[in-house]
Image (cartoon, rainbow, N blue to C red; front, side, top):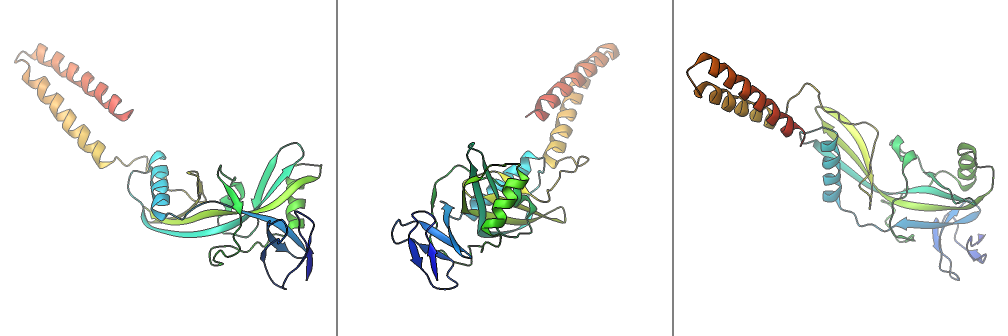
Length: 246
């Protein structure tokens, strides 16, 4: 099969059914899309499951989920997205393959080093693109109301951690792009507004008991004792307010 390099225009003879290749003339990394070749890149990243678990837990803590999540399962993939740029400088990305994670449609390419896609990458990690070049071009211009021609459309493989975890007996899904700390969540663990964390409960119990004891021990006079109790209550409220603001 004879195809044309999308970068330098050289004629390339390739084997049928071959997905990735490197142009022998300009050294561009290409992916075969039916009867054409398309530039193909990937984001430079080294898999680190411990790092991504930390990102997930930090994100959940910010949303108010104090307890540790259980049964975290991680599926790491090099997921393809079409990256389009227009004459006016705008850029748009869209998924180039199907996935159960609907939030993939909002993923943006994070700041990082793009490199030529390594065709020797394990195919168990690289997801095969199923959205064709023509379909991506039509979808991009129609959805984003860009009437002008796309200046450039190329395929980028993003290192994505697909996370499945359990919190409070329910399963949830999330995804993290390598070199980023942004979480894309399909279903999100939510903190119970009526559940008081154990550490808060202990603090308030000890603090209230301390201030109450101080109020009782200051004087035997009922009036002074009442004033002391009121002052202890106000002090307890102030300390509690500062504690909860942390």
